[in-house]
Structure formats: structure tokens, C-alpha cells
Length: 91
Image 1: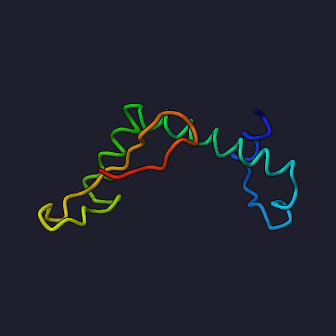
Image 2 (image 1 turned 60 degrees about the horizontal axis):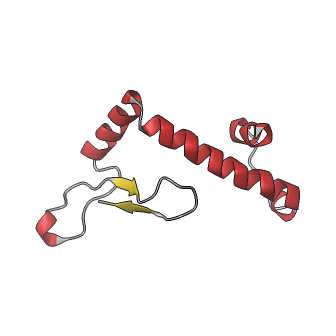
């Protein structure tokens, strides 16, 4: 959807009145899905994996709350590769 891509690339942040329009909400939801797909593809690229590795090593995603884990870094992961099926978990 070209409107969703324009929204992603826009520097303008939506305001409250935008969220009251049905047409805007449809494009906004499509933009969220499109951004998620682009992000997933980037993370699986060599450059994306290296960036995720660095963030993992710096514990940017947090640490395990269990005492026996000794604050070991965690890594976010998706349970499904389908859109809107589940939330991201940490491992």
C-alpha cells in the first residue's frame, strides 16, 4: 500500500484528530503491518543480526528476572511469523 509507505516515511506525527477519521485508521493499521514486515526482514539480514547481537551483548532488551539466571541478557522473539497473532516474548 503506497499510502502506508508514505505514512511510514512521513516526518509528521499524527494528532488526535487524525485518529478520529476512519480512512486514516485504515492506512495507519496497514502502515503498522508494513513496518513490522520491513523490520522483520531487516533483523534477519546480516547487518540486522549484527545489530541485534550488539544490543543483546549490551543487555538492551533487558535481563532475566530469575535469580539463577544471574541477570543474563534476554532476546526478544516472535512466536509466529503471521501478523497480529501473538505478542513478542523474551527468551
